Image 1 (tube, rainbow, N blue to C red):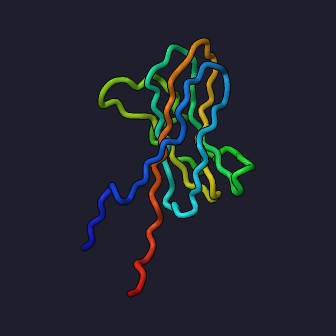
Image 2 (image 1 turned 180 degrees about the vertical axis):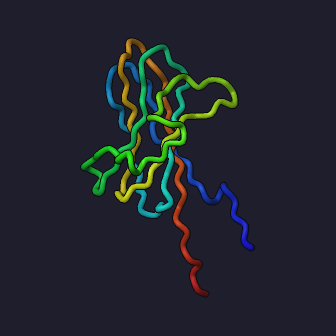
Length: 138
């Protein structure tokens, strides 16, 4: 029986890094998911926060120009409702996460901030797993 290691199966990416100090929607980087049919998951980290409300959502696009929210029926949310972001500063603290299966080729994370009077430092990471392909015949 073949064994596989997680380090070879998963690809981590920095999707967004921002200091947010206004009520706004901050778009993360665009990712091409053409060879990643096993789905994807975003993790959000707030290293420091003074106030405000921050929420993570996902958008997808068939053409990298027309963006729409990923439908809730395609979201995988192991933490319950849409992740509300508080400062994650304690060692060993689990990061909030939100995943999806999408039929569109491109995906990005969006952090929407409200009730902001000062700021928060936000980072979002994408983890994606490539599809398994048959080995080439020799």
